[in-house]
Structure formats: C-alpha cells, structure tokens
Image (cartoon, rainbow, N blue to C red; front, side, top):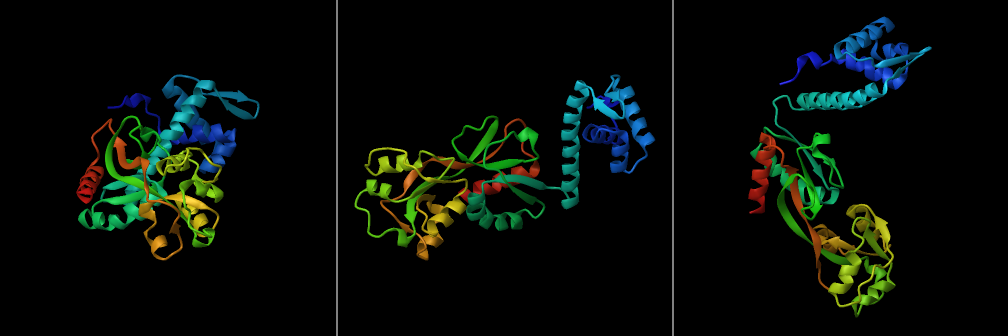
Amino acid sequence: MFARRYLPSIPSLLALEAVARLGTASAAAAELNLTQGAVSRQLQVLEGQLGVPLLIRDKHRLRLTPAAQDFVTEARRALSTLASASLSLRANPTGGSLNLAILPAFGIHWLAPRLARFARQHPEVTVNLSTRLKPFDFEATNFDAAIHYGRQDWPHVNYLKLMDEDLLAVAAPALLSHPLTQAGDILHLPLLQLDSRPGDWSRWLTHHGAPPQRPPAMLFDQFATMSQAAIHGLGAALVPTYLLDRDLAEGRLVPVFGPPIPALGAYYLTYPSSAPPRAPLASFITWLASELR
C-alpha cells in the first residue's frame, strides 16, 4: 500500500521537526531527551533515506532547505493525525468513535437531548463533539460528519436534511413600552442580529409588508449570546423558534410583531461523499433518519 523505502521513522521525523522549530540540534536534543549526537544521526539517516539534503549548516544554527520546509509542513500534519488516532484509540479501545462537528445552539438544544437514545441503541459508539461554525475541508480534519446550516452548498459532501428553521422577532418585555402596530415600527427599537445573517431583518420587514432595508444592528456570532442580550433588554432579535420555548413560557422574551417567518436555510448532517461512511457514522445516519421519521 505504501512505498516502505520512503517511509521515514518516527524518531527521524521528530528530530527534523524539532530542529526546524528550534534551530539547533542541541535544543532539539534537550526537548526530545536525546543527546545532540543522536539527533544528528537521525537527521543523517533521514537525508540518506530520502536522498536529498534537508539542512543548511550556518555557523551554530541549522536551517532547512526550502524543499525540507515543505516536507516538514506535511510531516507535522501526518504526526498530528497519528497522535489524534492514538488518542482516539486510548479513549475508545473497543473501537467505534464518531467525531462530529456541531453548531453550538443546534447541538445543545436539538441534538444533545436526543443523543442519549443513540447511546442506548449503540453503546459500541463513542460520540465526540466539537464546535465548528463554518464549512471546512473534511480531509484536513479528523471529523466524520458535521451539522451544517444553510443551503446545499458545501462541496463534496452528502446531505441528510434534519429540519427547516423559522425565525420569530422577540424582545424583553421591558423594551416594549406599547405593542407595535406595523412592522416598520420595529426600526424604532435597537436591533440585534447574527453577523453571518445580515439580510434577516430585511427579509422580516418584507415578509410583514414593510419596505425592505438593512437596518443597523448589534452583531453577534452565536444565538446563545444574542438571546441573552435580548433577555437583558439590549434590543429585539430574530431567534429560531426551536430555541425559544422556555424563554417565552417563562416570560423572559415576548413576540414583538407578527408570526414567525421561514428562514432561508435548513439544518443538515453532512459527511464526505468521497468514501462510504465508517460503521459508527453509518449507524448514526440510520438512527438520525429514524428520529426524523
């Protein structure tokens, strides 16, 4: 599967990476708990195996050749991938880890309450969750799948639609001195919005019969912080209805004007289309599909 003659040893790679970062064989030796001679021998072995010079010896410092700098960049990725695989193996020695990138609000309010059912049905799978707000290159990470909001515009992935989204304009009761009689009256209130959704207020105004415009608003990167700002009276916010049940029921937030409007995007589970899903991901996809039914 691999050209074994070109696969360097881990000690040689660690020696080269340390020298590239620290600049001297003595500093690399101290970090790796080796002698300076041992580090020098590892570097010589690596140069002999690859058949190209890797280092420029400049007085008391070592500099990498331009080609070696590119090689070290790739080697660091490989070492990081290997270290991550080792950590996953230690965390789940029976196999079956699933690394999932989630959106914070959706992950906490929609996915997390359901994961206990998945754990009961698939005790062999360990789910690891990390936050990612934007699409990324699956091949450059160890993620098996991700929760995506928006349209089907993430290249080279498969999609499983999870749910549509509706947005409701809400505010703290103290912010509303009197009910609004028309949608345009909301422009007299301070407004809050996500920085990733600059057109939401314009769409809300148009939906409720007011002229479209993009009013100034305080910007947030997540619904959780924006909702808290709204609760504390900093302004009116457009919040997904699935996040509002408790705040509306307990009176921390109230509707400002009109019913919810449909959002432009939807929520999807995305995963690479370049290869069949690993067994833990296949189990997760099947389970999610049954949850949606």
